[in-house]
Structure formats: structure tokens, C-alpha cells
Image (cartoon, rainbow, N blue to C red):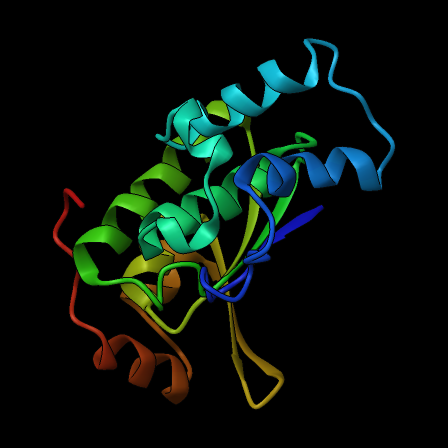
Length: 172
């Protein structure tokens, strides 16, 4: 299991180069990639839409969307099956957030990932998720197939969440 945090600025150590940030999970878990570390780091960046020139740079040299892509690459380093996404696009502007959401969806399909996607945006939940659990003040108030919960919400809080965010276009 790995996690992608909400704030792409705070989630990366500003004193570390991207290559150190991406190599850290391998060091912590004492795992060596079969294809070699340098090759694996390049592959990780390519997977999230960045190139190897990012390896020598520091986090402050990247935009918020690029930083979040680096966070995603780090989370996928050890090839987890389960990833917690804690409001992964809330700190990004809409167009960059849409690109990151599409990336997450592509990665989910390509690698067979299971996401726990934490969000207040029901349109994003509907776009990315198969099942949804709606929580209010730490209590589960609704659970079910995402399309069904979004189309016919039973709980008032779920209805308010849906009403609070505009629908996303069908092609994000």
C-alpha cells in the first residue's frame, strides 16, 4: 500500500533531488529493482509523463501538477496493488487537475490498481471509482456502486455533496 498526499508542495523534501525522492522507497524497503535503479527511476518518470531530465532537479523547479506526478511516481515505485489518494487534485488548478485525474485513471487500468480515493468532489469520484463510501463526521452514511449512489443518493449528506460540485464533462 502507498499513499499520494493532497499537497504536492509539502509532500516532497525540498532538499532532495527527484532521483533521491524516487529512490527512497527502494532504500527504505531494502529492495533493488531487477532492471537497475537508474533504469527504474527513468521508467517511473516516463509512466507519469515526465522525462529523465527531472531526475537531477529539485521540487521547487516544478509546477504543482509536475510535483503531483512525482508523488504518484514515488507511490508506484514498489508496484503496490493498493494506493490511497488523499484529495490528490484539490491543490491543483482545474486543467492540471483534470490531467492528473486522467493519468490516475490510465495508471489504474494499466497496472490493475485499487484506489481508496478520498475526495469531496462527487464528479471526480464518479469518474474514477466503481464503488463509493460516503462519510460524514467520521461515520459511514452511504455505501454502494458509484453510479447508483450518484444517480439515486439515499442520504441527505450525499445529495448535498452531489449538489455542491458541478458535473464534469464526459471527456476530462
